[in-house]
Structure formats: structure tokens, C-alpha cells
Image (cartoon, rainbow, N blue to C red; front, side, top):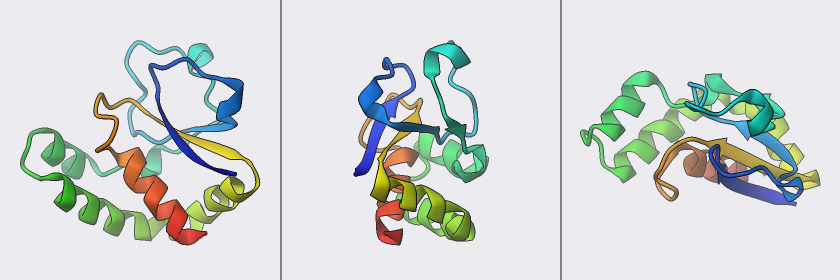
Length: 116
């Protein structure tokens, strides 16, 4: 099927399929009922150090992407189930960032597609 990205602040939709929150911190102001998250994979979020460096401008997008992909390699085996799920049904990676193009969910989608 595929992997879509969606902000946690956007309304869930039945077409989202299996919804996975991929941030280390629950989105501020969003209740669990509103979010309709099927699974929260906080362990695969970027490390606090990496996230903070990107958000404060110490790292550009390419450096963040490269370093986060390196972090994801330690979760390779545990991420195979998400990659396999995306082959069978719609998978939506949910994130809180205001930046819709340059965020951890985008990097994670690229990584999962490489596993397929």
C-alpha cells in the first residue's frame, strides 16, 4: 500500500490506515482519543541531542537526515514489521513538527522504503 505522513494536529481519517506516532514526546494539546494512534514508537524518534541540534539550527537538514538515518540502523530489525505492514496496508507516520517536509517522519519513511 504505502507510507503517508500526517501531523498529529490534523484530523485522523479512515484512509490513514495504521497510525504510528514517531515522536519521542506526546504532541502537546492532543488527547489520545483525538489522535487515534494505533502504536507509539517513541524509541525510534531522533535522540534528544539530535532533535535539539536540528531545531536550534546547529544542524542543517542534510546533516540531520544523515545522522538520524545512522541512528535508525540500530532499530533496523524492530522496524521491519512497519516496513512489512506498509506493503500490506496503509501506514501513516504521525509527527508533531510544524515543518511538514523536513522532519523525522520523512527520514523514517525513506528508511522504511529502503527496507522494503
